[in-house]
Amino acid sequence: VKLITAKRAGFCFGVKRAIDIAFDTAEKKKAGVYTLGPIIHNPQVVERLQTMGVRSVNSVRDLARKDPKAVIVRTHGVTENIMNSLSKNGHAVIDATCPFVKKAQHYAKLLKEEGYKIIILGDKEHPEVKGIMSYAGRGAVVVKDASEFPETKARVGVIVQTTQNVEKLKELLAVAVGHTKELKVYNTICNSTALRLKETEEMAQRADVMLIVGGKNSANTTQLARLCQSLGVATYHIETASEIKDAWFSRAATVGLTAGASTPDWIIKEVKKRIKDIGGRRTYGHPKGRYSKGRA
Ligand code: SF4
Image (cartoon, rainbow, N blue to C red):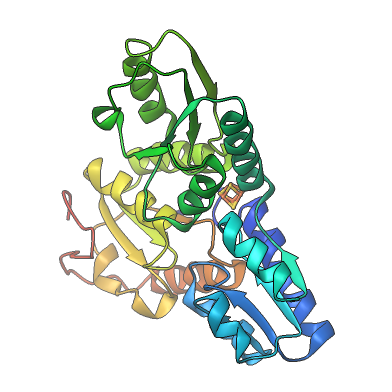
């Protein structure tokens, strides 16, 4: 089996920064470190941090009973209200919000102050979007795609969830120009996501089987798996090497391997080792993974 590994597999800049901050804080404080929500969408990293005394809580209220030594804000950021409550309650806040997400929050605030009707392209349930929304103020609207662009005569300001793809933004803007005489756009899509998707797409066109490594709860990992699936290549979304089955590679000459932005290097290395071990001992099974579709 020829294995091709994506150059961009694994931690992006923002996640690496947040994880370094979390491990650093854990070492310094020893215990009593909390994150608001899991620091990243990767259960294995969260478990590792737990063994070092870093716990996750769901709300500011939960922190009141814990007497934390430090509270880490994760890469997605939090709402303005939450940030204010943390300071008001006297917590030592360590802000690991990705600087690109911070920038989107900043533009939201700016557009609000300038009186624009703000449209956010993204998933309204995603914590990053909830955070940006809080800075954009009451009149802001979240749309999942161009079809949801609202009827408006107002001056429109557009901001984008960092992990959206640029095609969706282009479609939205094509609709937006027909709706308003003044349009201001901040393209806050993170380059890391776009490049990772592009590389994955190219790889899926050459591979017989694609392995996508990362949390099942990670939106960007799932997006990679769905992309490969849509290209008709047999695709498996796994969290760890232990899920891999020999039969997946029975008829594969080339295997593509990539990983989401929240997947640590040590998990990618274990997956590579497992595929190499399988190398000589192929079996004749039929690949049927979570996202398997097309060639078997
Ligand atoms: S994907 Fe981009 S915006 Fe999101 S955490 Fe990574 S670097 Fe930051």
